[in-house]
Image (cartoon, rainbow, N blue to C red):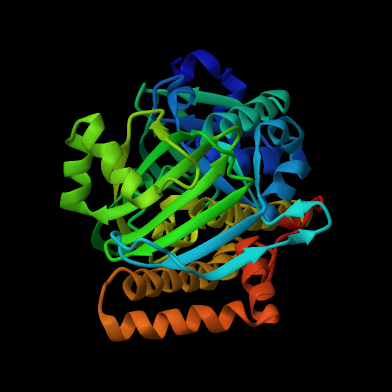
Length: 415
C-alpha cells in the first residue's frame, strides 16, 4: 500500500519515523508509542508486504529481551511457541573426530523458572510485534523505501519512493546491515569480511533434544545446533565461503551427508526441513550511531559474527536504550531529535557494541583454525572456565543480556 493512501493529511507530520519493519524497527515503535501515546510514530519498510511471513529462520532471544517483550505485551503470545534453552555444551574438535569431548557446559537459570534464552521462530516474533503495533495505532507502510531526506533545525523532511513527503522530529534507521539511510546520512563504517558464510536451516530428528544447545568449534568455523519446538533444531553452520556456496548448490543427499558428519547421530536420523541458505559473514561497526535528528539501531549500527548468538539481542539493547532516552527527553520537554539528546543514546550503546564486536572477532579468529598450539591453549582455557562457577555465572549473565548498564525495558521495568 502506498504511503499517501495510508496517511491522512495531518499524519504527514510525525514525531518519529522508523525505517525498517524487522524486529528492531517494530520493537522501537512499540516501545516509544506504549510509553508515550502522544508521540506520533510510524514505520516505513522497503520490503514487499508479507515477506516476513515466509521467513523460515529462528532466533535466540536472551532472557533480558524476553523481559522486554513481556513489558511490551508480546511475550505471552510468543511463549507457547518458544523453546527454552536449558543448557549449552561447547566442544572443540575436527570434523572427522569420532568423539567430541565437552570442554565447557552452561546450565541453570538467571532466575527461578527463567532460562537464559529461548529459541523463537522469526515469523512468530515478527507477528507478535506487528499485532502489538496495530493495537497501539502505529501505521506500517510496506513496499515503500525512503528515497531521500534533508535535516533542518526543527525537523527532518523525508521523501518516500512513492512520492509521499513526511516531516518528523526524529528519523530512526533500522534498515539492516547494508543500510541505505546510513549512507544517506554520510555515516562511515569500519568493516571487514571473514571469508566465511553462515549456512542456516532447520532439521528434524528422531529423538528429543531436551532443550540443549551445542556449539562445536570446527577448523572452518563454529557449527551450532539450537533447539526448536518438537524434535527439531536450528542449524547455524559456518564454513569458508567457497565451501558454503558449494554445499548450498549441491543436491540434497550430498548436503545431508555433510551435515550428518557435523551433527552426528546422537538424536537419531536427521532430515532437512527447509531450503538451506547462506549469508556472508563479516564485522561492521558504524563510526557514529547518531546525527542531528537521525539515529541508527540494530544491524544498521553494527553487524557481528554469529559465534556468540548476540546479534539480535544487541539490536534489542539498542531499542531499549533509544526508547528510554527519547521518552525521558520528551517528558522533560526536550527536543527528541536534538543531537545532544541522541548522543546520550550513542554513549550508552557504543562501548558495549564495540566490545561485543571485538569479542566475537577474537573468538572467531581464535577458534576458526586448526593450529595445534592454539588449539591446546584454547582447550585448556575452556576447561579452566568450566571449573570456575563464578566465571560461568558471569558468562551466563552476559549471554542473557543482564550484564552491565541495562536499560529499564530489559529488566522488565516500565519506561
